[in-house]
Image 1 (tube, rainbow, N blue to C red):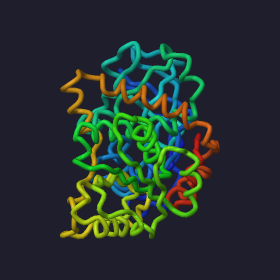
Image 2 (image 1 turned 60 degrees about the vertical axis):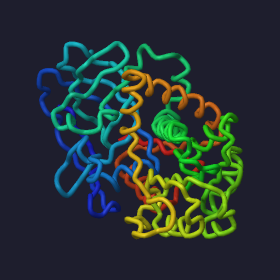
Image 3 (image 1 turned 180 degrees about the vertical axis):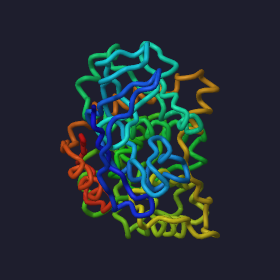
Length: 361
C-alpha cells in the first residue's frame, strides 16, 4: 500500500505546519494516483494561502476547516490508474499540493491535456484544473523543467497583466509602477512592458534595498526605487500601480504621493502579507482593486476562442524564461521538513528574488 505524505498549513497561522501521513485510498473508477516529483515554491504560493478562503485556493486539495494544503505548480507521474484514458507512467505538469502523492480524476482528456473533474473542484476557477500531458510537448520545454515549475505560472500571470493593461489603454497612464519588483510576476511584467517598444511606457520597479541590485541587473526597468523613497518620484506623471506586495503602508504612500495622477491601482499578490489588509477608504487617486486573472482570461476566451489566450501566455512564459533564466539560482530540497523550512523562508521574505526553490516530498 502506497503511503502519502502531506504538508499541512494552519489556515489561521501560516507559519504553523505539520506533516500528515496516510495510506493511499483505493481508486474509484476514473481516478489516478499521481506521484508528485517536484514543485516550485515562490511568493506566489504565499498569495495562494493568504487568499485561500476569499478566492478558494484551499479548496483545490482540501484538508479540513483548520488546516489546508498549499498548492504549487510542478510535475508528477501516474503510479496507479483506474482511468481507461490515462496509463500508468504518464507524466504531467500542473497544480499539485505540497505532498508526495495526490488522487486526480481526469476528464475532458485530449492528446495534450486533461482536466481534473473531481467534484470538489467543479466550482473553483477552472484555469487551475488543467494538466498538461508532457509526452507530446516540444523538446525545448524539457530544457526548462525547474524553471517551468518556478517561473511559468508567474510569467503567465505577468502576460495576463501585460495584456490587461494594453486592453485598457493603461487607464490613461504614461508610467507603470510595479510593487515588489523582484518578485517573479513583477519582473516578468516589467520584461514584457520594457521590451515592447510600441508601448512607450515608463516602467518603475519598487523594491527593498536588498533586492535593488538584482532588479537593476535584470535590465527591464527604467528606474528602481527603494521602499521609503517613493516621494522622489515625479508626482505629476500619470501612473498605474500594479502591486505584487499587498503592502498596505506602501499603497497608502503611493496614493498620497501621486494623488489624482494615480489612475489605477491593481492588487495582484501578497509578498508582504503581514503588512497587508484592506487600504483605508478615501485614499486620493483611483480606488485599489483586486486583480483576478481568470476574469481577464475569460474575457479573452470569449473574444479569441477557448484556449487561445492561454497559448499566448504560455508562449510568452517560454520567451521570458529564456531571457531571464540565467539570473535564477535554483535550490532543490527534498522532504517535508525541508519544504516546511522553505515555506517559512518565503513567509519571512528571506528568499532573494534571484533564488528559485524546488521542493520534493
